[in-house]
Length: 221
Image (cartoon, rainbow, N blue to C red):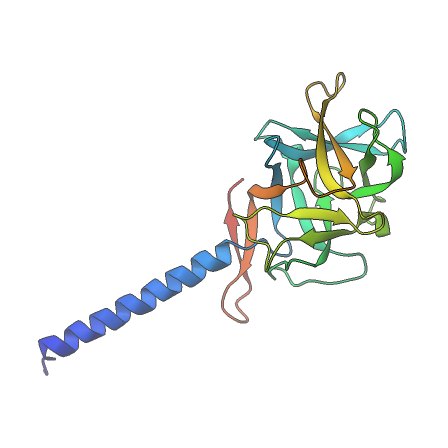
């Protein structure tokens, strides 16, 4: 049996360590991305509340399903799936890029985050609702432009601009009474200032692995 010199053995160990480190860094980099098919909760960084919906309709405006924001971290009604725009396709695990047009699909009620030219009930800003048929399909009012730099990375704040009306998804700071007592009003705002920044919080993050091996899931629900 041949014995490798110490110097050669040390070199092989070093190479192996470098390869493992690079693989770890690459895996960590992939885990950082929000991708097509990801299910997540969106945290408003100014008010520390999560984007939320439920089977409660607005009593004014469109009368569609209301969208609010809640301080509760564990509420399953705060789960949103990232999808391509209507009629478009994105591969499961494909990173979502800044400037992409997307839909945010509410899992519990099978409706999409939506806006239109109705006034919000508390502050008089633009109403944000959840909309769609029994198949989860709506219209162009479900489309949002992702505003950020590069790819959508979980640790960075992003904004969502409504395609049809140019308004930014935000929180007004107003609070509802019954039947959704304590939840905050979510609105469309004309300027990307206070209340319009969001960050990916808890979720089921899907990211690509090696070619042709499918996608892996990273859960932080």
